[in-house]
Amino acid sequence: MGYFKELYGKMSQKPSSDIAVIDRTKIFRHSTEYILERKKRPFSKYNLKVKRFNGIKHYKGICEKDKHVIGTLDEKPIFCIKDSFKEGTRKDIYLSKNNELIGSIKCCPSIRKYIIEYTNLITESKEYLVMKSDRRVVVCGIYQGIGPNAPLIAHIIEINVNPANVLFIFLQGLILYL
Image (cartoon, rainbow, N blue to C red; front, top):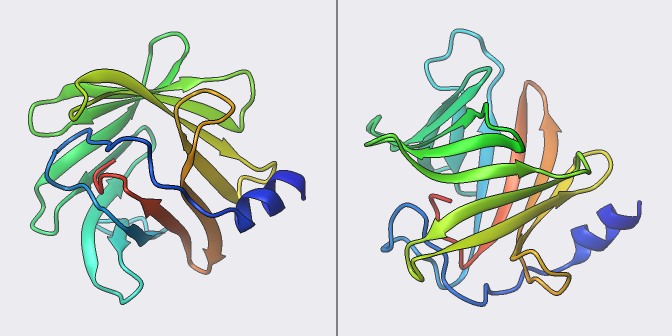
């Protein structure tokens, strides 16, 4: 239970700087919580919903075997995450309107740790987020930066609700589209 218990009870911190990957105008100054709901219905047009705890949907998406597309409620794609064929990279993140590469999810020696490399639109420099999960991949922490003192800026907690998997995402100061 070590990392799970430590992370589950740990509070998110405000990032040391604003993070914008897709749009500079969507930065939150307060803690924000979303539910990411994945439907397992094979004939659904959209099998991914992003909503608030009050049930209001904000985004929807399509998850396929090797590609995930997140878009607005009026069906305009925002970004896409695809399997990568580059060595050392697990996924590539593209801006959907022009298919521009905006980030990559790098592999680490541990299967429970990933490094997301992106260009921050605020600082206009290459930055990193580190995702670390517990052994059972139930809870995941997202840290700003690679170092051991990097601030924990988000939690992802998976709760299996039949028939859908629901991910509770606790974000603080992150751009919504990240």
